[in-house]
Length: 82
Image (cartoon, rainbow, N blue to C red):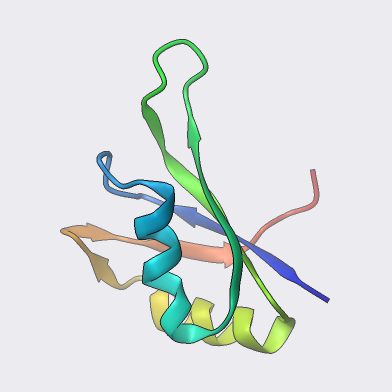
């Protein structure tokens, strides 16, 4: 079963493809989406990455949480149900 991750403190200029590329070294990324402001279309500084399974998600969390990514210290955790 796939696992969705919350990714915070993203660089403002990052796009969905760059976010996906950052995580694919840790497993199969099913989707990556940066949340944008509905009126301006600008990044809100966070997004979600969906990994193929829990094991890959846990590997990605351990590797990416707190890591420096393009000058920003990422916050990566399992996403909470909406």
